[in-house]
Structure formats: structure tokens, C-alpha cells
Image (tube, rainbow, N blue to C red; front, side, top):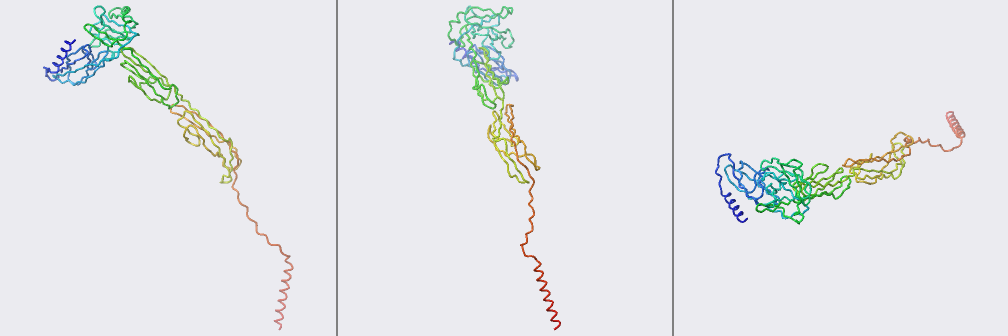
Length: 441
């Protein structure tokens, strides 16, 4: 191993110092990719290219170089390739220290190209677990793929082209070795044998490799989603939390609509209808689904009641001489908007409103009417409800009263006028006699 590291270091130094000989415009550039561990596989622009450290001849332009090895954290390097020039990429992957525990079984692949790529439960690079040469030998050395118990979709694809060589569901049984013969008839491709070594294992590193030996232990995928409340009313908040381990791809959906894709996270929601939150976590170790349903009560309930069912109304001409009032007690549960006709919009979900009912008639006569008040409440979830309250109005409407004309003042009581007239007659007669005497004299 020391000699291998020395050779690798020398190659990397050589790669860094070397200058490309081809300087023709449009010619490829050279990128030396040094990987550690040496079993890692190199992808370029999402296509597998080569196993182990290699020199890549790439066209000019920007490229994404990704390095994968199960049991290690992948690395992605963005490089800009210049025609005829040379550069190096050092991809020393960081080991995932946690080990894997059972129950488990083993998958052995036979009659497939040694360099073919093996994927579990998906074909993206994150589902890559190794190549056939790391899991196809049982006789001379240990080359084994250890997998959690359960059914896994196995994909064996040609390196570089990703052409399918073999794929299908494989049931992994506890402490058994399933051998996949890719070229046999379909009903003869899976052969099960006892694997007593599995029962002796406690925990295994995710990846170990030696001279002509390799052990790849795939960790089971775990995942769960929970809601802090199962039953809410419209517009009430709910907190949805999910988490997973060893998943390559995760999806959170709300009523089949994607809302998140992080491996772990939390959302604060106000669902408008009953909502099923589903979490799917997929990785080489399996596919796990979990769900949590939040029931949303969209129903609105209203009530309205008068404190007194009857009031008085009296009007004479243009003047209202008596107008009674009453208090309307109302409530609206699970509502965001409340109106009372003919009052208008009111705030809150309950309260008391003072009203003075008035009749519709305007002409004189007795009043005997019913005034109706209607409450309507709605919410953002489509719920609505109405209720009514009636107040009986009695009284009267009379014409304007006109004041009567005042009578003439009465004369004082006096004696009969005849004596007065007689006296006046005597007076005038005496005056006349005196005038006649003067004329004679």
C-alpha cells in the first residue's frame, strides 16, 4: 500500500507538471483526476467515465467532474478545459465513519462484465454502490456486497454508455447469499445459498478494500414524517417535520404536490383542506415512505339572538316619540369574515350589537312588523354559514297634529243698555231745548 501511495503521488506530481503536446485549436484538453480511495469512479457531466485515477481528454469548455465511492462523501469539481492545456484535479474523498448493522444478506453478481456498474434502487450516481468486480468472487478472495434485508431494485449498467445489462427486483433474505446470474433464463437467474458469516457480523464498515478483495456494506435507509397536530380548524398552523438517514433522494408532498426535497427539514403550514403529507426517502439501502394526515375542519357555525323579542315604535308626524332597542348577541366559530345585515361587517368571532328596529311602513296607522337580522360568516377554506334573528316591532304612526284656533275674548257682564239709551235721549232733548231758547232770546 505504501508503494501504491508513492506511485500515485508521483503520478499526480507528473500530471501537474506535464504540458499537453496538442495545441491545435479546438483540440481536447487533458485533466488528470487523482482519486482516493483508488476504487472510486469518475463521472464527467453526469456520465460515468473511468475507474481509479485517470487522465481524461475533454473538449474545451466547462465540465463537471464528480467522484463517487460508496461509504465516502462524493466530491464535485467544476473545471474549465482549455484546448491543448493540462490540469489536475485531486479528489480525496472523506470516509463516512458510521458503520452498518444487520439484519442483512448478500448479493453476488456473476456473468457480467467486471467493469459494469451496479446501482441499487435508482440509477443516479448517488445510487452507485460499486462495479461487478467488487462483488463477484466467493472462492479465492472476499468480494461481497452486503445489503439490508428486503427487496431491492438492482441495475447493472455498462460503464461509460450506461446501457442496461441486467435489472430487476432482488429479494435479500437474512443471512443468505443471493447469486444473480445475468445470462440465465429469467426463472433461473436468482439462486439462494446460506450465508452463515452474516450471523457472525456485528457492525461493518461501509467500504473496505484490499488486494483483490472488497466489502461494501450498504446502510438501510430510514425516514419518517410527523405533524404536531392531527386536527385543526381553518387557518390554524401546523408544523410538519421529517428526517432521514442514508437517503440519496428525498421528496415531501402535500396532497401529491411537491413541497420540499431536503433529507431533513420542517415546514410551518396553514392547510386549507385536509392534507396528506407524504415523505419518500430512497437510497442504495432501500426506499422508505412515511405519511402524516392533517384533518382540517372547514365548517363555520353561526348564531344570533335578540335580548328582547319585541320593541315599541311610535311616530307622530316627523317626530319619533318612542323607539325601543335590543341587544343582538352573536357568534361565529371557525370564521375569518363576519357580516350582519343590515348592520355591516363586525369584528371578532362573537359579540353584542345594540340595534333600534324601525318599521318599513311610513303612512299613518298601527305598527305590527317583524325586523330580521341575518349573520353571514365565511372562512378561507370555503366554509360558510348563516343565521337569522327576528324582532317584533309594535306601535303606531300618526299624522302631524295641527293646533285649534283660539276663540275671541268674552265681553264683561253689564246692565241692560235700555236705561243708558233713555238717559242719552233725555240729554239730547234737554240740549235741544236750550238751543231753542237762545234763538228766541
